[in-house]
Image (cartoon, rainbow, N blue to C red; front, side, top):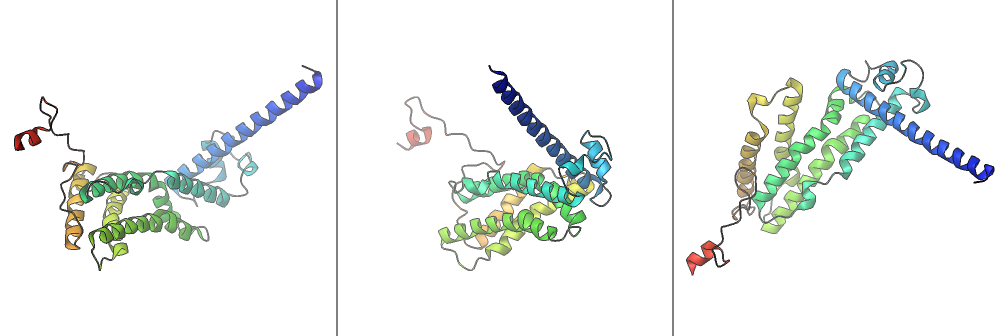
Length: 252
């Protein structure tokens, strides 16, 4: 390799390595800042603390190589959270299923998990919602309005398929999803399950309440479920030696 080509290769490698290191440092700063904001609040967190948590020398000015201010760090961290949430597959993307009960169980399990993922943003809303201009509106849309709107669309589709009218889908979405949000909020605030009710126990009753609501509004909730009451798929029916379902064999 000629000296000139080697010099170009070395310089290219140095530049790409420097970019990778810069990206890694920026990521560490973002993670450190969002963790500290959630733990002790935006106002109480200093630039030096963020740098120290990221493994950098505190008050060295390292953060300002990547962000203009602490507010910019907060905005970048929130935008990253929102992007991560938006690319996650929603349970609603897997619908429709064989019956309404199965759909409600799937939706409930997904929503409980999704609330865990959204918890850092919920905490920011509660603690720092108005600390940055425009931040509260951005968080409300991403954390609350958009998920509730998607659930309302699912309710509307279910009502339309059942030929049911006079269903306030948006209000119902707030009711059925809001109960789960309240459950997770109490857990977050007090550090324990409300009334020591675990997720499975909560989900089982939540599903029955949703079914009752669906029946009240005339939605089709009477079909045989492919899921058991525990939220897991029922086993396939046993087969006879001849390969036919045993139930079918008995009928014939």
